[in-house]
Length: 242
Image (cartoon, rainbow, N blue to C red; front, side, top):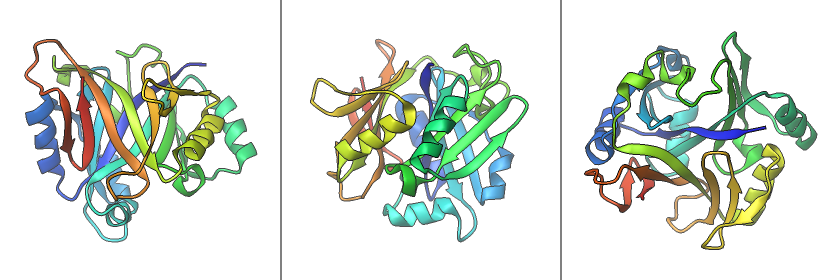
């Protein structure tokens, strides 16, 4: 069964400021603003990064999950890792055996969402979704709206890695490995890594004092683009451009 890294989400106090930074630094444009997230007390913007997506959410009322996450991690930063798979059956069997709770589970006609409880998974929010008819990476992806391809720019080619930080990255990697049914390998720097079909999940020690969570991503850009290579911070997320 293939597993893809399809979307990462950040939570921010000022949505438009962070979206503006992604546009200025990586040339990303907004593909969709989902009115449905208002039910969670959030506004959002989803940007196309090649055939994957970067979403920024921002709470507009008190006592939201996003707002509590902002407080816990001391400001803007990584919030959620969203994966795409072919079918939920095998993953559901594993998470049931592991005793992992679900925060959101909904089977729509074209999109099936399963968001796992971060206290049970560790790391960040982990969401594992199925898009009916979405076998092609250039095909439909409901969270990005009906016309996301029109918003794709020629700067970012792909999100090639997500970096989840923890006090015990080896144990966290083992937990996610058990959930996803993928082995742990060591990357070139010796970091515990789970290889997906289009990207890597890296598990690293906390070095920024901000606690456990989605600490960074790696993006590939087109040769000769204006994007600056190396590491920078956007919306409290470490972004390494390669």
